[in-house]
Image (tube, rainbow, N blue to C red; front, side):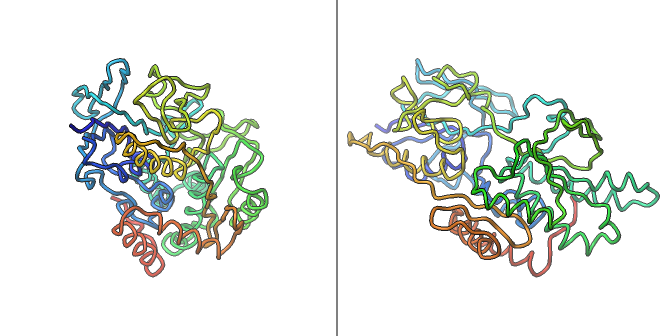
Length: 407
């Protein structure tokens, strides 16, 4: 009889695990509110139309031998091997039993309880978030093009603010810069002098996980691109029309994208599994949750105390692949080796056909790094369909420009 395996989540960790599972040995159920895998590394490119949304998603139901259920897991009852779930649309609830549980639910954006963030800021974690940003960006330019508005109103509509100097914030600012340079200047005449892009970072530099020289190079490129970088700054309050900063200044804005750190989901915060001070599930080197025999955690929502790996897509993907293979061996009674992480480095796009490559063998920047960035991400896309669509999107953008229609 097949063992009941329940996988929570549809991100890099869960998807990589599901690709390795032997479905002759397991009866697999996937529980996630999102019915697709999202290649988040290219998500900033979708916010301005460089890449289309559906080019970087893969339906979970394409995993034919697994049973997908679109719902939230809101409680784990480890004492009786059961999870409680709820569908967010119909509000119907149900329970699922498991023999083995894999928790790969990721994290959510941390608002740091700052007033107005939830109400007025735009997040960038899902395809739906990127679509909202894309609509808002176009709306800002259309609003600024209205007749009989003051110069101050026009500047307010065209003041784009990014909070967070990590890879997501930097790449969104870079994509927005390209959109302005390559498409806005052609299609929205006379707005050049009103546009302002501001990037706010609480630390003293951008991309603090990258090499110091690459971080400085990014600052230099952004200055050349007229992106106003405010380091050692943080937002204290947000209203519908204004942003207040810790130095006492405040200004009106058209769009605010919130790309700061992450925090635990409600499921992880409220579960009774062992957690550390950062609300991450504590797992051992085999990714098994501490003090349990059949629950595993991987990706951003978990941590090995002795080896706190970076919370990146790369980490989750490698852990998922390892765990899928390990579960196949464990059910056959074979021994498994502990998980070992090999850091392959990080990449980031910084605009104007320039990128950063921060890997062991090569630390580079500029056009060559941009070619490398594109080639790596093409190979990492999970299906041939995604690879073809992304290549076509890049070609289409190069030849015809980005689509500026709103619907």
